[in-house]
Length: 480
Ligand code: NAD
Image (cartoon, rainbow, N blue to C red; front, side):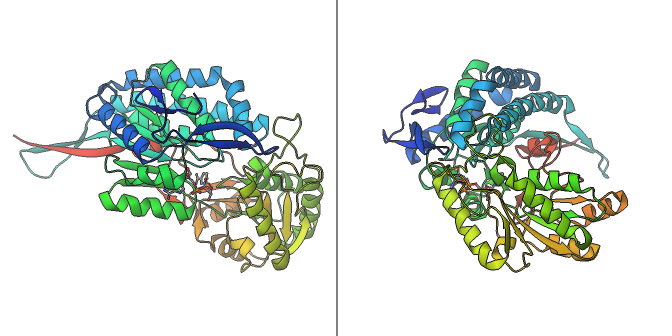
């Protein structure tokens, strides 16, 4: 099944007959081969999704009926948590306990949107008061049509869930193109859809490379909406492709998120959240708090503690008991991150890490790395590294911290730590970012909006905002 595509409810061979290797980054062994989908496969998948939308049952089912199938998908995922988590570790590299969280979260996302499918139906038409006698109007929300979803490799099943669940809850149909680096668990959605009784064509999955499968999907005239998560350069191409047919588009892109620590923060708490904020998931997290600003009186003590604790983080294969930091997703990503570290050595003071851990040269590992005294002009301060590398710098005043935090072309997330909650609230409001944490970093809730300001993207996923991504609003005005 892994070297086939999931189109119109069936497992089919790609038109090219070709496949490609998926590598386990813990030892660079070949973990799987998957189908190398191309434009013809994308066309077949979009046509299937189009038929399922235009004449199939899915958009015409009641919210309760769609919700029941989404719940079955959630149950199927939950029942297979361990098996899917094990696959996710080999696909992506992350430690097993984190992969388990991802799969549990994934099931939770389907449960949540099952509820929103029901709520959408209950909402019904909304009356709009009009100022002219004889006229009355209402607004109804309807599915937007066929959605094309293109996702990255850092949370393969979860990133797919953030798009599949709200799109299906809204009544849309979808073609999903997972990352070529982590296509294995995304394909499991085909089996999950079959087990849950999802009608054919509602969800189609085409594995393949960006240029061969992603681009034709973004350019296909049969797609009404593009939902993309990935890098800024690819986001730009997706937006340009969407412009041709004026497709709706939502983008979740990169980040270089700040964490501002005031000197009244207990040292232990600051250390805990800083480490989690950057080293969780090997730092391959769009919202990672990769720029840490520390109020001057706490700066040196905090740095010393951070270096000590980071040096203790256990690194190894994600399947090994007690490992907290797995390999990066690929040799390419490892090379990219090591390249940033080399630049960093010329730009700032390296206080911890900076290389490949001894004894783990066979995998795609990078040590937890901390740079201090990082100037605001340094490339490691301004560019997204997407690995276990954190930049630390001191600040003197609240105004300076806010200025430095906001001085970025990104605006995905930001965090502030202080025991003075008035100040923390004030700083939280001053951040130009879509996701703000007070006295923590990274907790993500399915109910709350997720997305960025500035070049971090357009639109919001999760919560009711995620559902709205897949809905059109229609006014119906009557004269009588
Ligand atoms: P990427 O942009 O290289 O690839 C993402 C997806 O786009 C992949 O499926 C890829 O095959 C596809 N793609 C590549 N070229 C394409 C093209 N020309 N047309 C259509 N599709 C194409 O990004 P990545 O390396 O997989 O992911 C890392 C990036 O994703 C980081 O910048 C990170 O910040 C971002 N990210 C953001 C969020 C968020 O929620 N904001 C979440 C995860 C990752």
